[in-house]
Image (cartoon, rainbow over all chains, first blue to last red; front, side, top):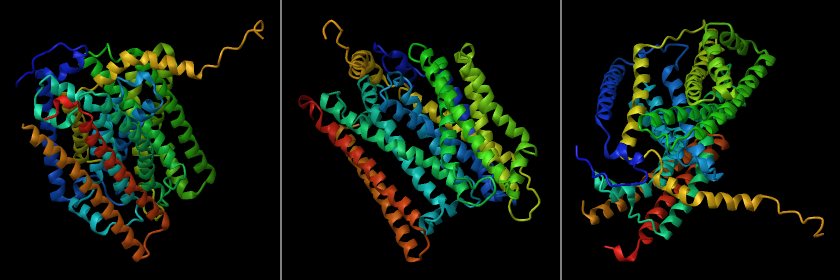
Amino acid sequence: MERAPAQPHPDYPLLRPIENPGRTFYYIVGVLLAILAYTGYVYVRQILFGLGVTGMAQPVTWGFYIINFVFFIGISHAGTLISAILRLSKAEWRRPITRMAEVITAIVLAIGGLHPIIDLGRPDRMLHLFYNGRLQSPLLWDVTSITAYFTASTIYLYIPMIPDIAILRDRGVKPRWLYEFLSWGWQGTERQHKVLDRAMNILMVVVIPIAVSVHTIISYIFAMTVQPGWHSTIFGPYFVVGAIFSGIAAILVLMIVFRKVFRLEGYLKHIHFNYLGILLLIMSLLWFYFTFSEYLTGYYGHEPNEMRVFWYKFTGAFAPYYWAMVTCNFLVPVILLGIRKFRTITGILFASISVIVGMWLERLIIVVPSLANPRLPYPTGIYIPSHTEWILFLGGVSVFILGYMLFARFFPVISIWEIEEGRHESAKMVNERITSYMPDPQPSSAQE
Amino acid sequence: MNQKWIYRLQIFSVSMVWVLFTGIAVWVFTLIRESLRLRDAPDASVGISIVAIPVFFTLAAVLTYVFIGLRKGRRKDVEP
């Protein structure tokens, strides 16, 4: 592999993974490709033998694939959404975080979006959606909104990357043609900066409602049926809160991993983890509030079918998962993030992993119990995921890691130009902003 | 790669974005027309679908604006 000459750069630690990726990168990529090859084999087997190789059967006809679909799309949420909110609110501490968050969205959204196709025993039937799609179906709204969000997120990730791609182009990093093509003639002139700023401002505003709409529409897949446990008016905001919650946890885990692996301690400081940790704590409390409201209203309604699902979760077969979810999503983060002594980087890492596990359990608890206890007089269904479903789940996670590693191999995971801009202009801008909203000094009594 | 080829590739990619998004808009319009003809969809479904079309065109317009703006904003002395 050819290496570009290591020219001095004030932010060389951010360029090091691109210019000198090291052997470990290739070993890990090799392992991930091996996992993906096996995943491909398992999936081909599913196509050949049908969905009989999964644990899905009547009445539980949605399993791991739909759970993972909702889970991955949820993880994707925080990226672009958090980045857009932080940019819009001019939070200066956002600078080393935004790109990492945006990359999560682009990669995970692609993985999540593939899951409903995996869930089809005959994936070729996906084409029916284009020929004979029914607008009445929230599944069709999903296709449209996920496509819109994926496109918006990719553009939102790409446009702020242009100045950094130009840095790589100017340093002669290979493949040079790729950087030349993607940098679109960036020279850093005043006019180019204006164009970039204007485009980013438009995208920030466009991306936020799209992000919110995506997870709301995903909740409609459930809420617009009259299945017990699904037919709820708060499912939209509940899903959005859960998605942002799990997404922030994913960002934190990635930030901690990248900080360690790429030695980015100078960029990702304790204050970044502290701020995001507090945000995670707030989301944990908000999640608990929504969960409490959701189940309390169901319990007071006391509709027999609803109560079957309720008790199935609280004391029945799914009770271990339900209480594990409450522990992972509420107790662990509140203890680790609420008590200042525990809010260290290690504590935040544990809390974030706990939230990711808890949110996956939440998706499991939403999907399976309602299908296992239908309104029709069926006996309670049983769902045990098969080897095929576990491997495809592992494959999804591997694609995410591989996608992120490949991105970090070709592009800086922290925005170099935004860091430089922050160094030169932030203090002045923040000072001006504070002066603009502070009350004017009162004239002293002597002057009066 | 030759600068001219890179420029052509950039033009091609922006054109493909427009082709793709126009395709999506045509697809959504076709579905709306069919559902109205068959009296199949409640009004809300049609409304939700219509909202998607300007979103895609806004995204394409932003990309095109960046592409043209960055080319026009280059320093004159290094123009090919």
